[in-house]
Figure 1 (cartoon, one colour):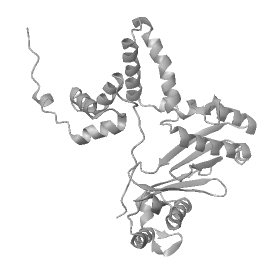
Figure 2 (spheres, one colour):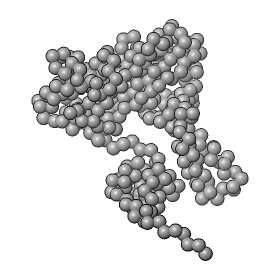
Figure 3 (spheres, helix red, strand yellow):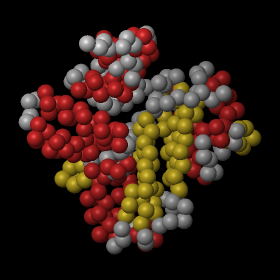
Figure 4 (spheres, one colour):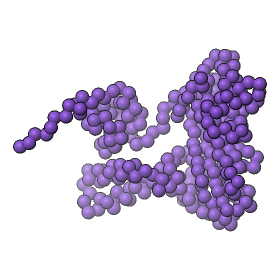
Length: 311
């Protein structure tokens, strides 16, 4: 009988503490379970996540990142609702994040990103500060750091513009300014875009996104490898439950509907009325305004998801 070739590479695969830590933060599983999963998958992170889920150890495939820093989300919407922007400004403590100077800084930077068509965080730093053009944004932040005695940085920024189309930008910043959302709705009628119904829809969807944190707009946006991994998890569960082989595929597809309703915005139950999905809400509003409506894009920020030092 032929022996299985000895794999020195597999035997020597080093599972580092950082790898275990990352897997724990993603799945919520215990340290030893994470280390074992990484060992069994030869350090393949995605396979380790799937393995933990199949074993029922992981509490979730996706988890909000731990807060890396304190800070605020600043948001701006133009008066005509054609432009919107957000900025995340970080500091070290909640005490500083609640000071008037820090709050005003976040607000001013959001306005600046929106009005000056700033595309990235690095582009912003060298611009004259909108509230004091005699200094750059970088110099303004450095000066405030020296005054307050705490490290600060602009982590990221984003800007939406309907760019001449019939549409509207909606925004929502959750209480405490820790979560912010921008959403763009497009339509075919300028009158529809200006209607109270469409403006309210944009605000409602932005608020919903702040709560639901969808990963994708629709099913077609989900990568095939993500779908395959999710189906395999449900298949393994069905097998362990002793389901007959001839009905497993049907069971898997039934459970995938729950997955879609969690990760796809259009299939989520609307937070204000769980009897209708976001897609149904959009369709009903389109009937009211007499023109089709589409959610063109959205983005959600949460303080601490990322931290970029302003140098």
